[in-house]
Length: 103
Image (cartoon, rainbow, N blue to C red; front, side, top):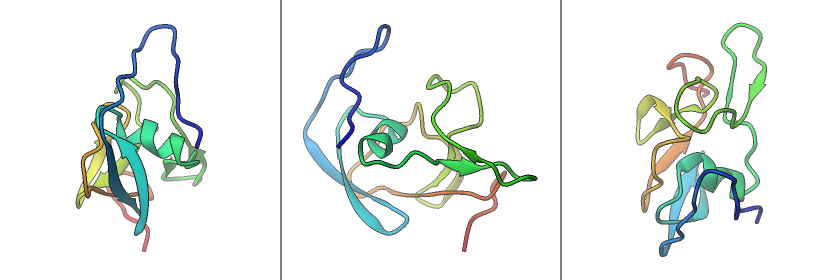
């Protein structure tokens, strides 16, 4: 696990252990974490790919201002996973570009 424990500005309050799914694989998270933080803790660094050149993008701003963390969450595309809390049983997957999903 590579959980973010300290940050100069943000605080991390760890709640109870929960499970969620990333592209069909069950992962562990803690209540209070964002989806992107939980993915990072589970070794997932690539959150999406750019639409035209298919370049890998990972966690960048962590404040919801860029598009590097857009993913599909429970069937809803373009969710900013850096500011969206992870929930028990949540299903997360990558997108190709703006709303296009990988098969």
